[in-house]
Amino acid sequence: MKPKEILVFGATGNIGRNLIRKLTKNNYKVVAVTRNIHQKGLKLKTQANPGYLELVELESLNEEKIKYLLKGCSICVNLIGILFEKNRDQFIKIHSTFPNILSKIAKEKKIDQFIHVSALGVENALDSKYAKSKLMGEINVRKNFKNSLILKPSIVYGIDDNFTTNFMSLLSKLPIMPLYYNGRTKFVPIHVSDLTEIIYQIIAREIKNETIQCVGPEEISFKEILMKILKSIRKRRLLIPMPLPVAKITAAFLGILPKPLLTLDQLLLLKYDNIPSKKYKTNFDLGLNANKKFEEEIEKYSYNWRSGGQYTRNNSQEIS
Ligand SMILES: NC(=O)c1ccc[n+]([C@@H]2O[C@H](COP(=O)([O-])OP(=O)(O)OC[C@H]3O[C@@H](n4cnc5c(N)ncnc54)[C@H](OP(=O)(O)O)[C@@H]3O)[C@@H](O)[C@H]2O)c1
Image (cartoon, rainbow, N blue to C red; front, side, top):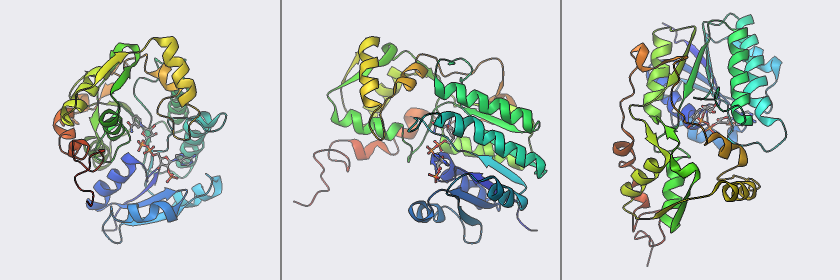
């Protein structure tokens, strides 16, 4: 039987790379879209069985090209997202306008399933531009493609993420670490392989017309996350609550960097717990379990940030 074709936008990201591996291993053919095939192509190609992955470069999200790509596909997954803006209104363009255009074309082309990945808790954090733009994207998608599947994950982590690995690097180098809002903000981290299993099950079982909050098995505060990372990299550091006015000044400065560690908008987001609301079902409500535990999983890849590890100052692997 001819494998079903799945068009994936944002395929080169952390979730996208893992999803391609899961889908192609299970005999789905993936068409992966990127803005830069030369930079990202090699990494993507190693994720899939030969013949199951096609790479497409789209310089800009051009409507005519999207129409052409969607013609041959039965399923479309949108994983495009950003954490900070480089230009004015970039959040709106990427999180609201693009899903609006894509879901309209998906409806017009009568594809079987449209899966859009948004974020958990954005409906509460409406003073954040990121959250507002994500929520608008959800509204647009639901309006245009009634049967779409909207996923709202909490923090997604795994061996090649930008979250735990960044904190491992910072905590292994800095003597102190600031805590925003006293580190009390709560999260329900989900391992990337649990999330991609959920997306795979949604596709395989043809689940439609749901908004699902995707969460892992444990609710953990930001301070607990840092403490678990410290334990895993075998380091002790001072975790110091940072007064909000000082946090705002640091975020304003850090926000200028090309890849900022913290922006003012992210500081606003951190004010709100990133936990499921009663408004939507969670993956557990639908029998889609996510059982990987944060502490156990990071223990599998944190050794590189321990004393003598590859990413520490006293690197035992250096040639003497
Ligand atoms: N990771 C998390 O903790 C988390 C939590 C909640 C929600 N989410 C959401 O889940 C989705 C995927 O997350 P992720 O962590 O896999 O993201 P990621 O690693 O940052 O990847 C983002 C993807 O978006 C594409 N992209 C970025 N800017 C773009 C632009 N201007 N035009 C076109 N494409 C652009 C990139 O593609 P190219 O560079 O190849 O073009 C990349 O593949 C996002 O919508 C994110 O908001 C993630």
